[in-house]
Image (cartoon, rainbow, N blue to C red):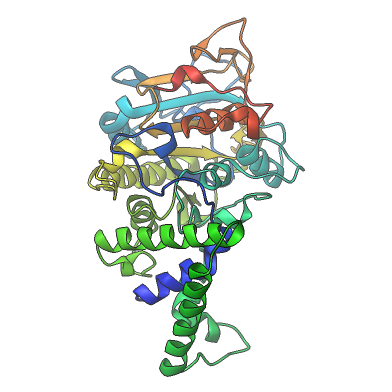
Length: 420
């Protein structure tokens, strides 16, 4: 499909009411926390942390992959295997920019509750998830603050900041009109002439409203209208945005473009594992080999594309983006009768990119494969510290994005020791 300037103006005009009116919409020449952008990669189903993130070979309580061995890349310790060459290739290339967080708790064993806890810090509560908070509180006025290309999103107060593109490409269908004939009940789109009249009417009304703006809401509308149009000009200065939602483009390219063009602050991609069968290996836990191999191929492609891209701000995109890789739960340390592993309430995550101290592992697992205690100020293991939670990880991301975690996630304690 082709996304024209008219399509982008229509998107901007219809979305103005949901945009924040804070900030100038332009990033600084040097990257600060408030300029930080995030690409979330969510592995659905629950991964086995012992396959990559946590070398647990000396732990008698954990059944580890027999093909695996401990390895290091620079100062980063991880788990290697000939069955997962993409993991080794990734670590060799990006270990100095990678921080592994081991042993944080997701206090449930069901996929829906674990997913909500992982992304919001709490199950059952109506609250915004971490990327929604980061996006809604960006100092820039963004066309699509949080673009959910695939995967789960939870919103409460930040719903207007979230654009769910949809697994069926619903947003592109809305933009080009193809969604009108996609369902059982079909509708005819307006003729070209009628469509042009509609666009002219909407733009005239918006301009008139802006021209008549005084104080209060009208003034805020006018200011936001001007900022959005300035951002659209920035987008076009980087090239034709027609490829953003082109069905032929990969999700990776779309995600990187949205971040580079300043359209979004956060983007979410979901990873379904081999053959899209999810990571939920209650039987044949060795399938985790295939899942991790494909995931790290994808992560290497993401980092390579980020490294080759310049942001609309003029900065290398690699200086602005942090890639957050996570899953909603871990897997039981012990194999079951089907050579699989059931759900486990402790898991790991990985952060890659700017704003963090790379080449290190934070946290760990004790003899029962539950979380070891961590001193949040240093990020080091400490018996006087506390075990990590999803809220702590979320608070770390909010702090990384220049927000006060106590305002949005009061139960979270950021791991400030990993922030640069």
